[in-house]
Image (cartoon, rainbow, N blue to C red):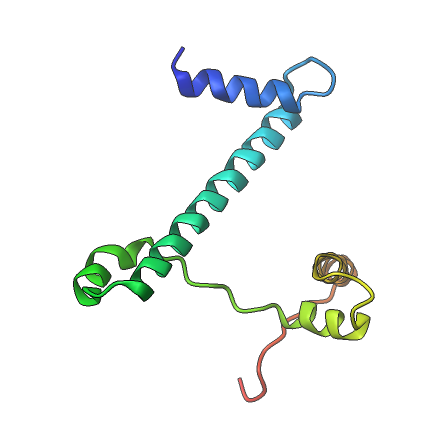
Length: 120
Protein backbone atom coordinates (compact mmCIF):
# COMPACT_ATOMS: atom_id res chain seq x y z
CA UNK A 1 0.00 0.00 0.00
CA UNK A 2 1.34 3.40 -0.95
CA UNK A 3 1.47 6.34 1.43
CA UNK A 4 -1.37 8.02 -0.47
CA UNK A 5 -3.54 4.91 -0.19
CA UNK A 6 -2.88 4.77 3.55
CA UNK A 7 -3.81 8.44 3.91
CA UNK A 8 -7.00 7.84 1.89
CA UNK A 9 -7.99 4.94 4.13
CA UNK A 10 -7.34 7.06 7.22
CA UNK A 11 -9.52 9.85 5.82
CA UNK A 12 -12.37 7.40 5.12
CA UNK A 13 -12.07 5.91 8.62
CA UNK A 14 -12.32 9.41 10.14
CA UNK A 15 -15.56 10.05 8.18
CA UNK A 16 -17.00 6.59 8.88
CA UNK A 17 -19.70 6.88 11.55
CA UNK A 18 -20.69 3.21 11.88
CA UNK A 19 -17.45 1.32 11.23
CA UNK A 20 -18.46 -0.16 7.89
CA UNK A 21 -16.18 1.83 5.52
CA UNK A 22 -19.24 2.60 3.43
CA UNK A 23 -19.75 4.62 0.28
CA UNK A 24 -21.01 7.71 2.14
CA UNK A 25 -17.87 7.79 4.28
CA UNK A 26 -15.70 7.49 1.17
CA UNK A 27 -17.57 10.34 -0.54
CA UNK A 28 -17.32 12.54 2.57
CA UNK A 29 -13.58 11.85 2.78
CA UNK A 30 -13.15 12.58 -0.92
CA UNK A 31 -15.08 15.85 -0.58
CA UNK A 32 -12.89 16.88 2.35
CA UNK A 33 -9.74 16.04 0.38
CA UNK A 34 -10.95 18.05 -2.62
CA UNK A 35 -11.85 21.00 -0.38
CA UNK A 36 -8.37 20.89 1.17
CA UNK A 37 -6.77 20.69 -2.28
CA UNK A 38 -8.84 23.61 -3.58
CA UNK A 39 -7.92 25.66 -0.49
CA UNK A 40 -4.24 24.90 -1.10
CA UNK A 41 -4.53 25.90 -4.76
CA UNK A 42 -6.16 29.17 -3.73
CA UNK A 43 -3.41 29.79 -1.17
CA UNK A 44 -0.73 29.24 -3.85
CA UNK A 45 -2.65 31.48 -6.26
CA UNK A 46 -2.91 34.26 -3.69
CA UNK A 47 0.80 33.99 -2.86
CA UNK A 48 1.80 34.07 -6.53
CA UNK A 49 -0.46 37.06 -7.13
CA UNK A 50 1.10 38.86 -4.17
CA UNK A 51 4.61 38.14 -5.48
CA UNK A 52 3.70 39.43 -8.94
CA UNK A 53 2.30 42.65 -7.48
CA UNK A 54 5.51 43.31 -5.54
CA UNK A 55 8.15 42.00 -7.93
CA UNK A 56 10.40 44.24 -9.99
CA UNK A 57 11.01 41.76 -12.85
CA UNK A 58 7.30 41.58 -13.45
CA UNK A 59 7.24 40.66 -17.16
CA UNK A 60 9.52 37.65 -16.68
CA UNK A 61 7.59 36.53 -13.61
CA UNK A 62 4.20 36.91 -15.30
CA UNK A 63 5.29 34.62 -18.14
CA UNK A 64 6.25 31.91 -15.67
CA UNK A 65 3.73 32.33 -12.86
CA UNK A 66 0.43 33.41 -14.44
CA UNK A 67 -0.69 29.82 -14.90
CA UNK A 68 -0.74 29.45 -11.11
CA UNK A 69 -3.20 32.30 -10.55
CA UNK A 70 -6.87 31.36 -10.14
CA UNK A 71 -9.21 34.15 -11.26
CA UNK A 72 -11.28 35.49 -8.39
CA UNK A 73 -14.95 34.53 -8.78
CA UNK A 74 -17.47 37.29 -9.27
CA UNK A 75 -19.54 37.91 -6.15
CA UNK A 76 -22.90 36.17 -6.21
CA UNK A 77 -25.52 38.88 -6.74
CA UNK A 78 -28.19 36.88 -4.88
CA UNK A 79 -25.89 36.56 -1.87
CA UNK A 80 -25.14 40.29 -2.05
CA UNK A 81 -28.87 41.10 -2.18
CA UNK A 82 -29.65 38.81 0.77
CA UNK A 83 -26.72 40.23 2.72
CA UNK A 84 -28.01 43.74 2.03
CA UNK A 85 -31.53 42.79 3.17
CA UNK A 86 -30.15 41.23 6.33
CA UNK A 87 -28.17 44.48 6.77
CA UNK A 88 -25.64 43.26 9.23
CA UNK A 89 -27.92 41.08 11.35
CA UNK A 90 -26.46 37.93 9.86
CA UNK A 91 -23.08 37.06 8.38
CA UNK A 92 -22.19 36.56 4.72
CA UNK A 93 -22.03 32.85 5.49
CA UNK A 94 -25.72 32.94 6.39
CA UNK A 95 -26.50 34.90 3.22
CA UNK A 96 -24.70 32.26 1.13
CA UNK A 97 -26.68 29.52 2.88
CA UNK A 98 -29.97 31.35 2.30
CA UNK A 99 -29.12 31.84 -1.38
CA UNK A 100 -28.32 28.13 -1.72
CA UNK A 101 -31.64 27.16 -0.12
CA UNK A 102 -33.60 29.64 -2.25
CA UNK A 103 -32.03 28.29 -5.44
CA UNK A 104 -32.69 24.67 -4.37
CA UNK A 105 -36.33 25.42 -3.47
CA UNK A 106 -36.95 27.18 -6.78
CA UNK A 107 -35.29 24.35 -8.71
CA UNK A 108 -37.33 21.71 -6.85
CA UNK A 109 -40.47 23.72 -7.69
CA UNK A 110 -39.66 23.61 -11.39
CA UNK A 111 -38.17 27.09 -11.72
CA UNK A 112 -34.80 28.27 -12.94
CA UNK A 113 -32.95 31.19 -11.45
CA UNK A 114 -30.49 33.06 -13.58
CA UNK A 115 -29.25 36.41 -12.41
CA UNK A 116 -27.59 38.47 -15.13
CA UNK A 117 -26.71 42.07 -15.68
CA UNK A 118 -29.25 44.24 -17.45
CA UNK A 119 -28.93 44.12 -21.22
CA UNK A 120 -27.42 40.63 -21.36
